[in-house]
Length: 180
Image (cartoon, rainbow, N blue to C red; front, side, top):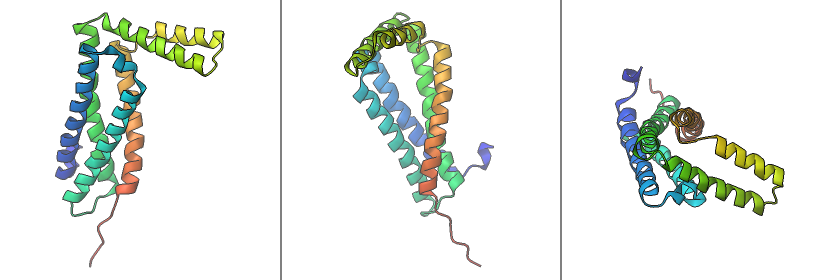
């Protein structure tokens, strides 16, 4: 299956997937070892999401450029999605190691930070006591850094990356004209 993929698609997906992973893993390492509050920082996580979207788009653009300005929908989807897949595999692996082997207490610490920030935000938006209790219960009962949660998150992320890649491919595709 992968042998059928255009070599430019493979090389750009690898290049940009590894770039995306490096930036994300760098962020997670800084957050883990220096400032765990970054895990719950809206602006930092929004930046990472936008960065990932940009990299997936750049991967498709670079593949298109290397193919003389023409890229089929399948190729544009493949390069974008594969970049996301490569990055997701590496990030998931690193997060599992950090929270389940390096410092098993870090997950509880980050969960507390997330709970505190989520409750504060819900209060600002006028959440009722029942709603706040429900939020607190959901967050405290759910270890989002366990291996199982990370694997589930990996697959949910792939669905998101597939949707994003479909949109990128729809905009990027440019079929080579047929000459007789």
